[in-house]
Amino acid sequence: MKYLLMIWSNPQTWGHPIFLRTTEAAAMTDDERAGMLRDFEELLAEISESGELVTGQALADPITARSVRVRDGESVVTDGPFVESKEQLAGYFVVDCASPHRAEEIAGRFPDARFAVVEVRPLMDGSEQDL
Image (cartoon, rainbow, N blue to C red; front, side, top):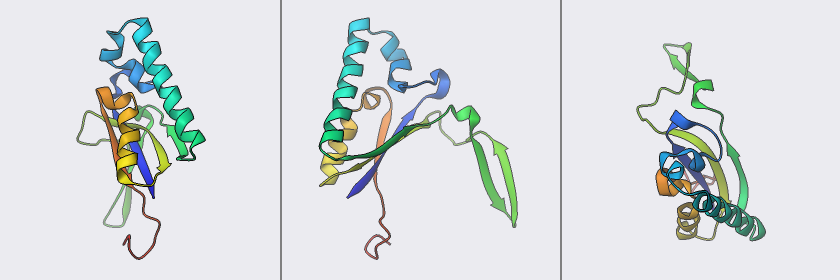
């Protein structure tokens, strides 16, 4: 089953990897930050080698977002994501795992989970059982 791992973060200090730009990471020593980055690189290598990593992509700063809404047949396009949250989607990974538990385990190993949220959501494959 494929799962979407969405990384949510505060956009005030946007940049990637986003976990290194948090106030918590700024308070760490250089060695602690290097260790966190090393853990992340090891996780990516592990899930790449196991075939669980399908894809991943960092997203541009939320300030570059445009929101499209159709109301009464008219498209209205506005600047920004304008969601009711201080956290914004920073990037995503798609993993193909044997179980939801494994997807959650991988999500919990992302450094971003220490400071923000990594949301895990199954991807629908379009089969009748998904609908």
